[in-house]
Image 1 (cartoon, rainbow, N blue to C red):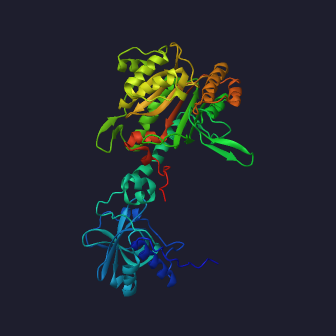
Image 2: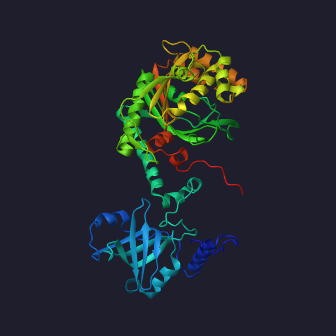
Image 3: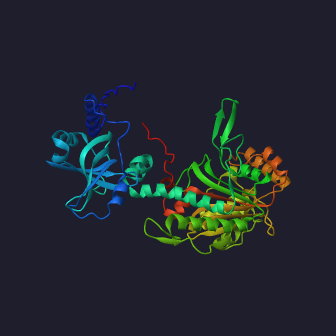
Length: 506
C-alpha cells in the first residue's frame, strides 16, 4: 500500500511564490488530486506531433487525437480560452488550448488556479492550428504530471542566468537555455566520434582501476581515500597510463580508455579536479605517429560534432582546425622569445634570472631546470598560441615516463598540443627500458622526499611488468572537456554538465 502524501507547510521565511505553490500542492492532495502521479497516458512526444503536422493552415483542424506532456513555459489566462506552451527535454514546444466548451467550467477553472510556470502538464485533445497559425492541441482533458514548487526565470523577457547560477543549478540552465542543451548533446556526439575512430583503427577499449594503491602515470597531487575492508589508504586515479601500458605488455597492441581522472590541484577556466580523459597507446608507434593520430581524431570530431572544421567562438571569432598544424620546439621557441639561446644545459641560476625579470613566481620545493623552462615557456609562448600547434621536445626532468630523444641530449620525445592558449593533448614516444624507468622513478622519489607532493613514486609492480618487455610504443593523452572547449569556445565548467563547485556558505 502506498503512503498517503503528507501536507507540510513551507518555512515561514520561504519566498512568497514557493509558499503559494506549496499551498497549492497541499490543497490538491487534500482534495484527492495527484500532484505527482506515477504516470500519464502520453501517446506522442511533442517532437512527433510537430513532425506529423508540419504544414497546417491557420485555423485548420484535424481529427488526430494525441496525448502529450511537457513543462509549462508560458501561460496566458483568458475568460473562456486559456493557452499554455509545453516544452520537452529537447526544447521542442507545442501550444495547448483550453476552452470552456471543450474542457468544461470546472476543469477550466482548475487550470487557472492550479497550473503554474514550470509544472509538468499532460494534455489530451485534437491537433489543430490556431487562428494565428500556431500548431496546437485543443484540450478535452488535462492533468498535472508534476507540480513545480519553484518558479522558473521568465523565459520570454530575455532573462539570463549568471554563469555561477548556470553551474550551480544546471537543471534550471538546461530548462531555460537552448545552448546548454546543445552542449549536453555535443559531448556524447564527441565521445561517439572518438570511439568510432579508434574502432576503425582496431584499438581495444579497456577499463583501468580508479582506486589505486599508489598514484602514477602523471606528476600530480592525488586525492586520498581509505578502504575499510583492507584498512588501507587508496588513491583516486590521476592517470590510467601505467595500467594501459601493462596491457601492451600483455599483447594488446592498440588500447585506449575514456574515463575520469582526479587531481587534487587548482580549479580555473581550464582545470577541474575531476575531468574526463582519453588515453591511447599503440605498440610500435612513436610521438610522430601519435601526432598524426591526434590530428585526425580532433579534425574528425569537429566534422562529426559541428559539421565543419571552422570553430565559431561565442564572440563570433573563428579559427580553423583543418589542414596541417604548426610545429615548434620548446627550447627553440623559448630562445626566440627571450632573444637568447636556452638549451638543456642552461643552468638553473640563469633561468631564475629570467623568471625574476618576468615576475614569474617559482616554488622552491618543485624547482628544477625542466620545470623552470616550462614555466618560462608557458609565460612567453604557450599563452599566446591560438592556432593548433604541436610543441615538441620537452625537458627530461618533467617527463619521467618518456624516452630520451633519439638525437638531442637532455630532452625527451614528447609533444603538447596547444589550441587557443591552452594545452589540449600530449603525446610521447614511451620509455620502455625498465632499468632507465627505475632510475627515473628513483629520481622522482628524491623530489618527493624533498617536499614535491606532485612527484611520482617507485611503482614496483609496473616495473615488474616492463621487465617482461614493453614493446616500442607511442601514447597520447587528450582531455575530453578541453576538446569540447576547443570545439565550442566555452570554459571548462560549461563543458562539464555537473562540475564540482564549492558549496555556498550558510
